[in-house]
Image (cartoon, rainbow, N blue to C red; front, top):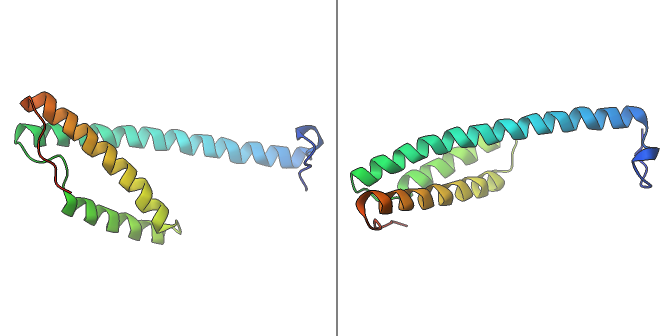
Length: 116
């Protein structure tokens, strides 16, 4: 079962079928990831509103560090590169903080001091 470099027309039908099966799984996983991220951001929006009402800073460096360490351990257990998991979580954290800053500005009429 080899895939030809000359185009998809030369691909063994069994290989093509396996590619389609795997790609369908990838598409389903991508959809689940998007839905899970949407749920996560719904929760973090609620956290942002709570922080804004109580004039708490949008960032919480101690929690962020704990979450990064936790995610690195989970990644190691799942045989996923912990550095990749950390980069992914840092990207999400940055977006959450940006949302919290925006919520704070809308709630209290001005920016709230950030930490970290």
